[in-house]
Image 1 (cartoon, chains in turn green, cyan):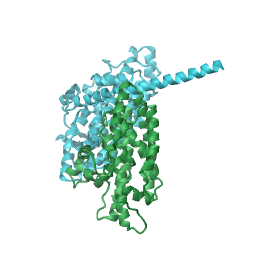
Image 2: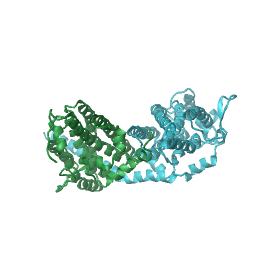
Image 3: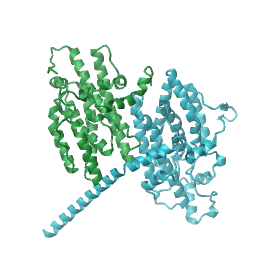
Image 4: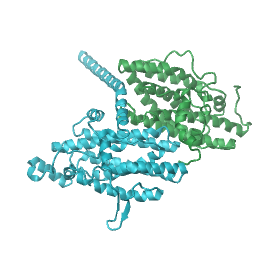
Length: 272
Length: 340
C-alpha cells in the first residue's frame, strides 16, 4: 500500500471512506471476542466465572454496537448504503471483517481463553485510552466509555494469568502453552498500515507502534509474577499489511460467522 | 416453579401436641410472621426441606442457562444477543444468591453440586426440553419465567429470612426477563409466515410443560401441608397454576397465538379459565430422567465441572501460596522486631 496523508484539501468523502474502514476495525474485534465469550455460557469452571465471562462479553458487545452503529452512519455519508449495526454484523462475509486474528482464535481450554483475553485486554485498554484523545468527538466518546470497561477487563484477565501461571504444574503448563500458541497473533496489534497512518495524521486515530512498549511492559510484569513468559516470536501472523484488520483471516472466522449469522442469512427479510 | 416437588420427609402436618417446647416457640414465630434466621433454632425437617427446595431452585437457575446458552451464539440481532446475555448473567447471579442462602442452613455449595451431578438433587424439569428455534427463547422468557415469577412472588414472604430476601432481588430481575421474552414473541407473531410458524410451534411445545412447572395437583401433593404450615409454600400448586393460566391466556390472545388446549374456555361462574387435563405421566417421566434433554443437561453440567477442576485447583494453589508468602513476611517482620 502506498502511504497517504489526510489533509484539509482532501474531499470529505475520502476521509469518510477511510473512517468507515477504521470504525469496522474498532468494532469487529470486540464483536468477535464477545461471540467467542458467548460460547462459554454454562460451561465455565465455576458459576462466578460464568458470570464474569458473560459480563465481559456483554461489555465488548456493547462497545461493538456503538462502533458499528457509528460506522453505518459514516457509511451513509460516503456511499449509497448506510448499513445499521445488524446489517454490518450479520451480512458481511469473513473477508469483509476487520477484527484482529487474535480474537477469532477458538476458546480452547480456560487458559487459552484467559490468555487470549489478557493479551487483547492489555492492548485494548491502551488503544481505547489513545482514542479518547481523538479529534472526532464520537470516537472519543465511545473510546472513553470502553476504556473504563477495558481497564477492569485487563485487571481481571491479568489476575487469572497469575493464578493459572503460578497455580499448579498443570495450570502453569497449560497457560504457557496458550502463550506459546497465541504469541504470534500479537504483532498485528502494533502494526499501522496506510489507513491507520492517515487517521493518526488527521488526529482521529493513533500510531499503533507506540503502544508496543507499554503493552510489553505490562504483559511482562504480569507474566513475571505468573512465572510465565511470552515466546520469542520469530514471525508474527498478519504482518506486512495482510492480517485480520485488512480482512485476511484464518479458517476459524468462517465457522464463527456461519453460526452467528445463521438466522439473518436464513430469513433475510425478517424483523426480530 | 423452580422447585416443583419437595419432600418434607413428614407424613402428616405436625400439631402443637406433637411438638417439644422449642418447636412450639419456633412455630409460634412463624405464625406471627417473624422471619427465621440462620442462627435460630429450627426443626431438622424444616432445615432439610429448605435445603432441598433452595438448592433445587439454585440448580434450576444454573441448568436453565443451558437451553438459553444454546441460542446466545445465534441470536438474530446484536440487541437481542445483548439482552439474552444479560438475562443469562442474571440467572448465574440468582444461582449464586440461592446457593448462598442454602449455605446458611449448613450445607456447602460443593456438596449441593455433588448432589446435582450424582443425580441426587433435582432441578426444574422444564429445562429438560430442547430449545429448537429462536421462538423458544421468547417462550422461555414469557412462559417459564412467567411461571417462575408466579411462584416466587409469594416466596418473598416465606418464613426463612435469607431465602425471602434472595427472592426479593430475584423477582425484580425476573419481571424484566418475562418482558423480554414476550417482546420476542410479539416481534415473531407480527413477523413473516416463517416467524409466525416458529412462534406457534414454540407455544405448542412449551404450554403443557409450563403448566407442569407448578408441580402435581393439590390432591396428589402429599407434602404441601407441612410446607404451608412452615410458610415455605404460601399458595398451593393448583392455585398458582390457575393464576398462571388466567394471566397467560389473554397474553396469547394478544399475540394471536392459540393455546394448544381444546378444553380451554373462560368460565363466567368461577371467574377463571377452565383448562384441560394435564398428562401427568409425561411429568413423572421427565422427572424420572426420561425427558428429551435430561442426559444432555446433566452431562453438560458434569463436563463443565470436571473440565474446570484444574482451574479451581490452580486458584486454590495460588491462594495458598499467597497466604504462605504473607505468613512468611509477617514472621520475618516479627523476627526483625525481636532482634532490633
